[in-house]
Length: 229
Image (tube, rainbow, N blue to C red; front, side, top):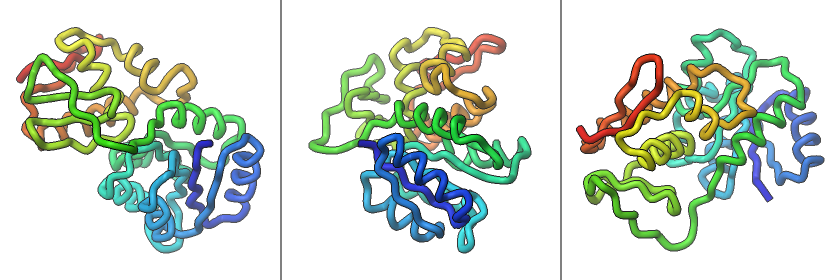
């Protein structure tokens, strides 16, 4: 059973979400502040965080950023009345996987939540040794969902890992934007392809910061490839 954490202070929004998620068979908890959300997520076993931006104590964008800094790498779905494109890009840039503007329909909310949960794989149990790779400096292990540069592990969000694993599986080959969107966000994705660009930008930065001996190259008008560099 998937565990969903709703971080929302407005009862008018939170209570219908809780009823809907419970009716769909999910285990669901609700907290009303950003601090409480960070504390609950830190205890583990949360597969999806549904996060309001207008919280009474901490701005939701800062909560999202802190979740990623603390190592939470499962889905984050932002709920907000801020519907501008810049706000959506900022939300995705700090680590959110999806963005839903208020008011929204419960059917659309459930479709987005299901799409994110399908991509969620919990980490647990004993560590799995990294898989062999054509480039020993960058090792991607799809089974353990872990990435290493030399002996150092690189912390990635769920979507960042899915993109890197797909590119690594056909290293040197160009993968189209359409294929990346279909396989990482799947056919039920409702949002803009700008999400791909923002997530790819974060992934590139993390590879650069870790001095990975590989780079993601943009093939204009087609897609992306992973190559040594």
